[in-house]
Length: 389
Image (cartoon, rainbow, N blue to C red; front, top):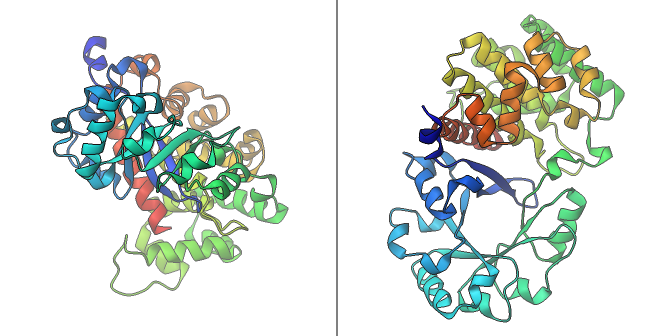
């Protein structure tokens, strides 16, 4: 596919929105600047078969940068109960825009104002929610109480700031807070850290099941999550599983390795909240695997790509340098290069998964539509992982 053909399809970065329990509730569609009209580009993405089923039950926040041009017919076929139309605050002052958005609200669509609109403009638009950068300053109280919400605070860099914004009236949060856990929330206990590294080492060298069982029995949290997983609706077993041996047999070696790699992120935090790194690791792992498969990679190459994706957040999870983590594991050289330096084919792909970039995507020879399909698969799997673990 030529560069001109690739550019016809929009490139989007999906930004996860969480509630106060760190559970994903929505996705913000952030379109690449070269996608043209952001709203029309989003509509192109929504023509993908079963897109809303893939992202269920998450809600989708669509950019509408020019609401004065929006026509109701453009929304035909979109489920109103899954859509929030994100409009600029400045546009809400326009009376025709107010009437147009109010009519759409009457038809069941929800309006989210991006920023703080002047006076009662947001109310005149029948807006329900506010989206704003609350990293430094909070909006006026009246701006929040005037609409029922949920209100979205963006650029959240810490869970402490999320708590402050929650107290102010926000209930949805987006940002890179998962990458900046509080020091006491990482796996800081020396014994626990060694046990995790030992388990990762066993997984990396495809150790015997009995060796895995020994370590699993020493980690109550990980053991609990594994048994909870195999007894979940995801596997629909006729009788419950009570032992690690049974769990290993049910999952199979390959799937066991993958689930355990993800279960490392599901270790219960002291505050009882879900670990926000878990779905991020799942997205990275799945996208890496799907993209390598799309490029013709065999099963072993797909497995290495999955490992590179799922392990790429271990330094954040464990609060220790990636060099120390890699030194304790028996990983393929390609995976090591990717994790330490984002080098080699897997490293370049990992950079692309971490931060979509038009030039890098074209250099990798991956069509934008292929990238979008990989995103859909990855987010669908991450959503299922989060619900079953």
